[in-house]
Length: 318
Image (cartoon, rainbow, N blue to C red; front, side, top):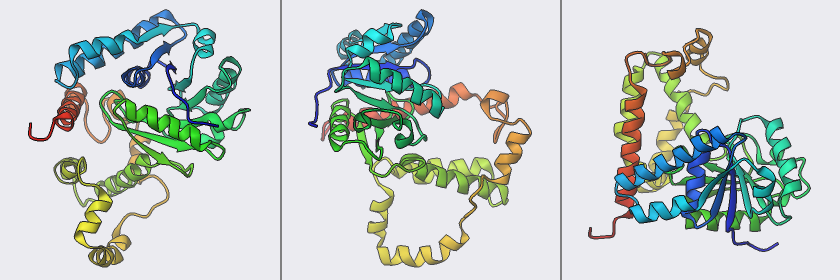
């Protein structure tokens, strides 16, 4: 196998992630087909793409002309066979169900040219398991875009047990061309990379609240105004080298004993779910969403991400 140039892409799914992925691939110069089963879903997906571009243009991250060019590269379709037959790359973002994904990729393998790369946006299902029924598993990988895809640079490229290195490098090159920051996960492990780190923090956060060490509000305040302030430019392991590994070892010697080491979800989390307190969709979870405005929370998130993108695009000395 050789690394290949990806010019035509098919994105399957017009829900939360698909439109942002379609935009990202168009940003890399691809002609993109955005597929859904109904015209109504296609239209909804295209509206989401347009809204994402408008956010970038209004935020000063993208020139209006560039946004228009990228939108022109994206077309909706309900014709899976034709779109798949023309694609160099297919990526799906549908339900997180292993059997459903396996069935879809088995079908796609019969519709696509032999050289087409197939990818899944799964955030947790094993790449090896998804590719298990395929005749050409060397051309399958996971490309996990972080949400929202048009604003978040991170994409995790996960190798399955039989994924070819050329497939990985073709995807990395494409994603870099889209302005993304791809990382390669070379062992197909639960949680990939980002979610492994994130769930360690989630476990500790629930445990801290459960044990009465701090309130949920103070946990989130500590993350937003402490760790989160430096993470965009100052990595976890960079910080350890700056501190000095001898000091880190001394602190870890006692700190690791004090951290939550449960292998099951926190009792607080289980109690919330059992009580039907599921978060935004039920009106209450860790917070009371009858008084806390989710639209305002996501607006502040997206505005921050836009400003961060803009600052990263600025030339030195600007």
